[in-house]
Image 1 (tube, rainbow, N blue to C red):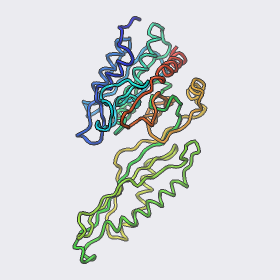
Image 2 (image 1 turned 90 degrees about the horizontal axis):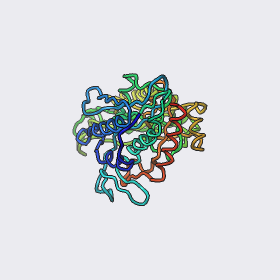
Image 3 (image 1 turned 90 degrees about the vertical axis):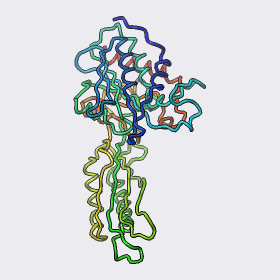
Image 4 (image 1 turned 180 degrees about the horizontal axis):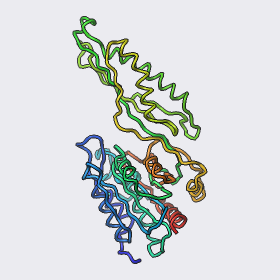
Length: 384
């Protein structure tokens, strides 16, 4: 197989960074990822991959990409997301939407998290373009990881891609990650009855009810900590964070409405729906006590925790190649969704999480060649 020459790895990354693809729950900030998807599809097709662009259901401006080299059962997926978080350009010392090379670093939005992974994957794949593969090599690029995980969820519904092994190139400092926590965001909403503040009997104060709710939620926080433990994590229990609270509109009115938003980070083995049910059950008795309505609503579907067994073949192989024991992180990725499709999934990439979501995000140049070498070894093991 002969391929059309591509620009250098650095040039490819520059083009990806220069193609804005912010995903955000705020529709005024949210952007399409199609420019990035089409770039990746074009490059991969030029070197012999078969590329399929899959628009998300009801979101024609968003798409996933499945690009395949070779055929057969099993195979290896090298996966990443094409979107970035929002950014404040005033806080950057360089252009976030244009790559800047200095101090042995490549600066730009998404260089570490995680557009930088794709040119490295392409460079590693080049070594095997003229070698018949016994198992397919699949490059997977997804939409909206940073906001809703809509891209990964669409793939689960589709049941593709099908492979035996998957590596997600999130920033881990080239250390294999076999398990991570999930994420839930819940809103506790109290509807009381407003009235003139001179007479408390004219209404039902939602803020007073929320005072008791806060106490119950803190007790629930402690229950989670006592009930669930996993010593593989630095923070060995699920965390619950009181994130923000809003209520009332004026000092001289009885507070008619109050809302508390919380963040829960479940560990493997926890059922998200059961956690929600337990939370709702714990606060409901306060509704009657304060004569208010209390509802618990999810701000999004949630992301389950992920765990690939320490004895899994891919885990052992990556430990051998990197020299690092597979460990855990507290942030969430698309790994549980790939696992749902039957793939042994490990998270490993060249960036650093300390650089993610920060002004002056960068990828260290000295991480590039080791990542290429690592991916070349994986392709040889799982595709040849």
